[in-house]
Image 1 (tube, one colour):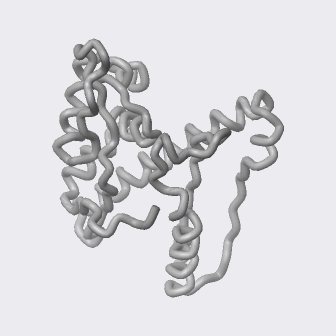
Image 2 (cartoon, helix red, strand yellow):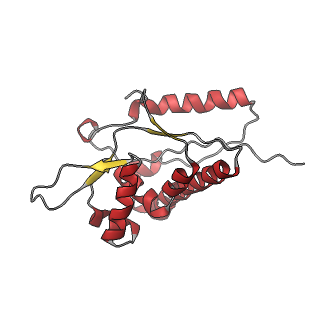
Length: 191
């Protein structure tokens, strides 16, 4: 699936900080799997009450990150799903508010990814051998210019693009949700 030509762009630091809330991040992450979940089902993930979780879902709907899905058979359960529209965050980090929002969102994403990785590492021996063999954890320090760093991040994104946005019907048999994290973080300059 090609990159969304019209992504939703978020620029307001207050909005972005609000989205970095741990419960909202858990809901976004759960719905990003393609599952349709009710507020009660999301509450099990967040540790909050269904009514508090419903509040968070409504807020996420206001930012077009989630949307109501078709009601279930009995018509009483109202599930939610991730919005089909990709969201892009663009912050002016030269302002204190923008820098704080970028830090809050970045740290929330790192925490979320760390939790996924930690869960796999701890229970890895219980995984089928083929999944243990392909799971990768690595890092590398490279000496790159700004232009080279941009080229590397663009190349990594291009490798992942064909796999983005697979609908349930498009998922190959035997596929699992796999977290891929790409992080280019320059080391802090020493004075």
